[in-house]
Every structure is written in C-alpha cells, then in structure tokens.
Length: 78
Image (cartoon, rainbow, N blue to C red; front, side, top):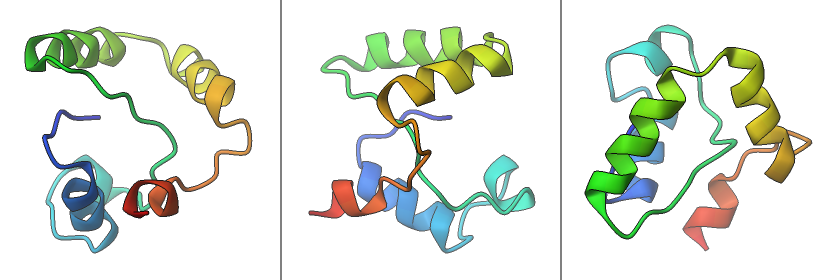
C-alpha cells in the first residue's frame, strides 16, 4: 500500500525491485488493486484506514473488482 502521484512509475519501481521495503522483501510484483483520489488528504486517509483492516477484508475488496487477482499493470500503462 502507498500513496503516489505517479502510479505507473511506482508500480514499475516495485516490479523491477528498485524500492526497498515490504514489497521487495516479499518479491511482490503484481498490482491487483488501486484507487484514485482527487485529493491527497483523502488518499492518505483511505490508505491509513485500509492498513488497519484485516487481511480477509482487503482480499474481499480486491475480489470485488478483480476476482481473478490479475496483474493490472497492462491496464495502467495503456
């Protein structure tokens, strides 16, 4: 999870292992869910809220919009 103003750059960095941290240490390469917000404050509040959720709630949120858990990379670079 994270907030960015450039989703393509951020996902690329994670896919290529350029960013130290949680995703690199666990070899996470796929984007399976994202939200867009017009206001940075709203985005940060949403991220903070989601970080408090149980994993099963997060999984259910993903499965609502992406039941196959497919990589959304191609969708954002088009």
